[in-house]
Image 1 (spheres, rainbow, N blue to C red):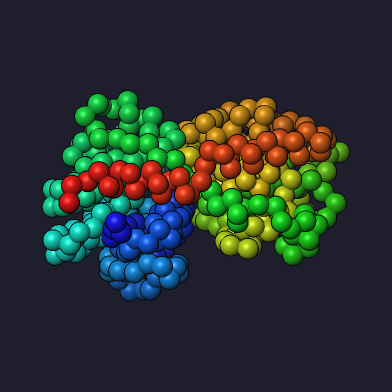
Image 2: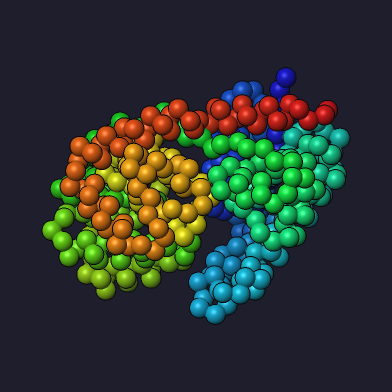
Length: 388
């Protein structure tokens, strides 16, 4: 029986991160199975949506204050950035306005037969559960520590999580209705079909060097300056490795200055945010993938890189250890350990045969364990159990 699914994702129209990509891929799979898909997202009061939506879904942009960027700016300030409640104030105001608007929309439509999937908004999920009964699913893209958020989770019909978020929520209390659903990877898209040389020519990258690739937001949480310190170490050796940074964010100018001051002007290549074929070219051009986060729940980029047959060097934080088999599909290093990153990069750069075998092993594991079709089937099982 076909069903109607309403996805609520506050950032979907303005920004595409892990949570947004999850919702897009899950909704695509649901639509491919004949189900109806709608999205509610925030639209700035004095602006327009910055991100496009696919044709398979209906979009409902709701006007609310777009204050997320203010929170990001405050996060990077030396004093205010350390005051958690203050730095998040603007984000909470905009988020609350959006949640109220969504709740009113759902209330007006409460007699319709639909399932709601909400990304990360616990307060809205709790209220929507009261309004809609057992038709509300809250996906938590990361763990939560505040007591008020735990209260929201306890009063939401069903919470979905994976990676470190699942483990964290599972430890909170037994009275949270929690289910584990893994993320997936589009293996048909993320596969190596373009030769490295061709991809490098397309992107304007050097042809004769080992390339390490980072993909992600340039924000403090990603700790990209640790990678720059690692490459300052590598520059003192004769090993020919360059770093490609793909992404945008508030730390871009700071990182560019650090690369210049470290004498790495010609060894660190800054590329803008990439999607679609451009992102595929970035992966195709690389030899190794690196991730330096101080925390990540279960980053999609790790699975994408593995699907592209790249060995991954990443920090041993959050849910990353459950993605990488240390010594088999990549290496785990402690956060902020730029020396360890440098040593592992040098090791893989000097042993082409070893890194290629790591990459092939990585793709085989990802193809076997992580697939968006399996993600959709798992969610449909949960959705079909709700009472009509």
